[in-house]
Length: 328
Image: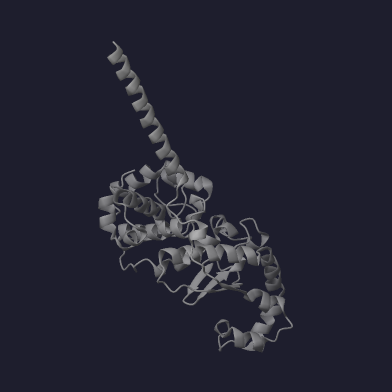
């Protein structure tokens, strides 16, 4: 009897230890992060230049001086009279005044952080240290540009979705024109440095290519909300989560993965107000859902294989599809 009771007591304490160990693992997993702490990131000084402030804000500064300092912004075929007129144009001045809400500190901190993370994961890459902001007449197709030794930011495309200067721009584009999306644009601009070039029109290859780009966001801007990486609203992200299996089943049932149909880019990869299934899925769907599916596949692949970021970026699409066993 005593031996039986002792066994039960020992068993109780064994289960208690197992429970405490499991709890400890849970706490560690919840509090640890695969990404480096801020103190562990490499130093990366940047030279931030607010060109729009020199061009539009300092009208006493001679144009010749600006041209000599920033020759790459002044094509030789454009006469000086055009630049002089642009500097004092009333609409340009209104746009310039609006960009003053974006502070040097915020621009510097956000840009520096992305470049620090990029340098951490790719220490041999020669990244741009000079960052120049400018006005581009709200050219939302060029919100950030990696120009080799320069990183250019169209500062007039980050004024906020409801800004009156964006009147007439489609809402699905205006939703992206917010300062919180700066890091996402910077990562996109830098991504070609790290992802092998794709020369294929196969739909699977294209969604995986976009997935690799979006995966870079997790590493270069890990503090962002998940939906900010792809520049979805929260409701669009929730729709994608809820309908992930429906979207994937649509791709499989319609044999789209290995299709080279050029219309698929327009329907599922290009910026648009919604993705085009031509079915009930169209309603409330976000555009670019194929990009999001590629990202989810990459995340599953990395989880199943334990591949590093560099290994994932170099893997081919069919290997990723096979080893991820992606089937939401």
